[in-house]
Length: 180
Length: 38
Image 1 (tube, rainbow over the protein chains, first blue to last red):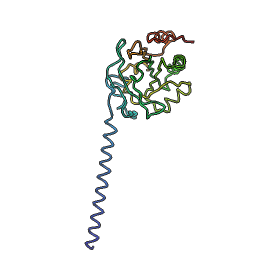
Image 2: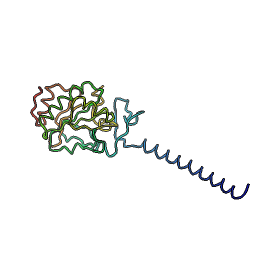
Image 3: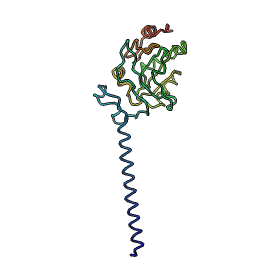
Image 4: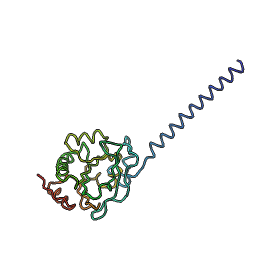
């Protein structure tokens, strides 16, 4: 074997090792990015205390969303702020505090929730009647935009809706106890 | 779960489970909205 072909063989081997190293590094970084998302869901829940976002198949949170003030809401006190993406346009983020100055009805819903389906048309009627004075804010629980918007469209609801895609906000409410 | 928050951002009422029409009216009243369920 000539010296040239030996060098060529070594060079190919080096590129091979480099390629494997790059693939491994990308895999490791991806794993940590996927598994180390914001974990604001804490405390007890319907899943034995396991944060919903850590359950197998749990959806991931959108960036820059979740609880902004991690206290549970109490009557007579300022409602804790949160930020969630718009269900109809996931490039938009709404904060609860954006609606200060208007009365706000925050309602958790899901496409599988029958009581929700009975409530939604009445919420829309109130929204239509009071316009700018009132904000009905639908918060979808753990569903993708298609399902969330699908049930609203089916019920002809046009009020603002956001996605609690990993239940980070629901974990600070009693929602998980509410729709068992 | 439904929360009723007034224009100052204060939580005035909450309801776990399905709202009845009278609860909806009463809780909207707590946030300054006079509404009658049809």
